[in-house]
Image 1: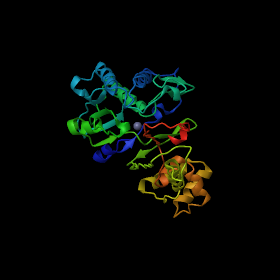
Image 2: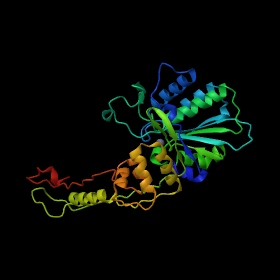
Image 3: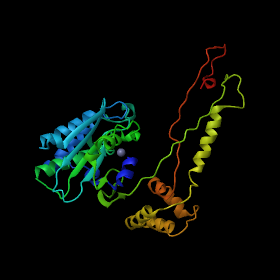
Image 4: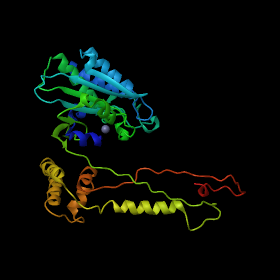
Length: 349
Ligand SMILES: [Zn+2]
């Protein structure tokens, strides 16, 4: 999620989840739908893992498709601020009556280790009405939809009352830490992506029995804050344990943290309140009643409706601040000394 960008352009986020959200129907595709799937497949099958993959290749591949479809060189540009790092900016010219709109998606994906996957993560597989592959949902379906739509607009001679800009950025998954993605574009080519507003990922379409029932709009994003807890001690030998043990200390802290997750206070804002009000209309009886009871006043955190609603991770995260441990790292510094009884792994770890 690209925070900075949403702030700068006051972006409204909207995702056309339904585009690929419904179970795929391979047989009955129109030529346009097939083109979208082909582009999707090409994107998924280019490894764009932020650290090791190649977003420049993905950006070039999408640029090639757009140029083939008739976009001019100057309206399709690929920028590679570093090796393997690419950003694409494409523009469909409108009449210019209104300011451009920016459609933003990211090309990079998080790591996918083959051994963690039941299928090859860099092959688009269509099975039982679903697509499998790294980035199928985050965020290559969106990039593919944008590119496929631009091509269609060009083919149909569509001239909107404003330019439609598509930007496919790199390094979103690391929050653009290296400033090679959207920040680089803002700094070096702001004119190319300047728009009245932007649509990016974030507000999915909700499905019920395979039918889209809502299209969410994300008005802003929860800000995340990372803390690093570090415990150290002088080490020792497993045959001579002491009371002081860094592992136990850390474990205690984490156990406390796990219990702290719940009492974060209930807090809604204008957007999340509206979200719950509208969601209640679409939910089943029990959930709808729970939502209405929780948002009607100051809820008792121990009440059944509040506990039930909080058990749903999506709802819980919108009811309050959340906090979770995500990564454990171990840095052992071994001394050169070896003793006779150096057998217990526990003493070194
Ligand atoms: Zn994403």
